[in-house]
Image 1 (tube, rainbow, N blue to C red):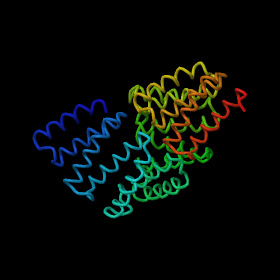
Image 2: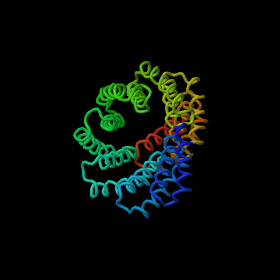
Image 3: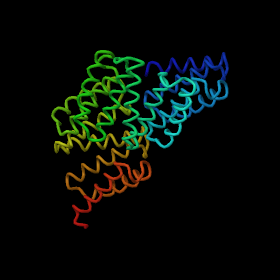
Image 4: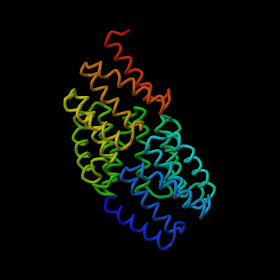
Length: 337
């Protein structure tokens, strides 16, 4: 993506000069450049460009043109990646309805819209709705695309993620292993989706307390992501978090703490203060202080995390409820009953 960016930028500039702002090819070049920013984790730069692309396509091509619908879907994805699920959801719903009407139920783009909406439900903790939709997406992709198509494999992995989020690790683990084997075969060891599968499998080991199995996988994933994506990419930062969490769970707080601090600084810079991942990093740091008996340091962070999660995720989200319990535990440890 770092090599692609200057090519996208030059193509956009040339088309703007030669063809004009509203030519479909110029708009496509703008969309390509925005997608490159998105892949680099530069969501704040991608977002205004995606909004402009959508507005131009609505004007030039019309609401129901496939490219216009694609632009709507891509804007929703950028909101989703910034943790702005309440903004992503109505767009996901609108795109799905349009694609069902214009393209039909079994068109790959329609299926993709179902997958996007299911993931938005998943991230909001609405697992029952997400699971049903993900099962339907998987069945459609198996029928339309075949078992080894990257999007089918992605659906298998996505379903496992929903099982994992519900604590159904025994169901998630064999699926993650299957997905990793398929991605190594189809995409190769260094493809971002293959690396993501390694991380997912490690997360399932971690959740089951199998830290000795999780740790070497997390280390490998972090090395690969640093090499391929760079230090500040959200996926690389996520890998640092996972490794630190594994150290924490093994009582290796002196190793975990500096990584958590670095991750929090990076996420504030890259994602912003109110992104769910940034809030998660604050929670991890507070947990590390709490585990070391440093309750006076943990308490104000837990309070801030709870306030942010109430605002961003809502009162009934599982992470918000976890924050309430964590703050209560800190009061309890200080004898403040």
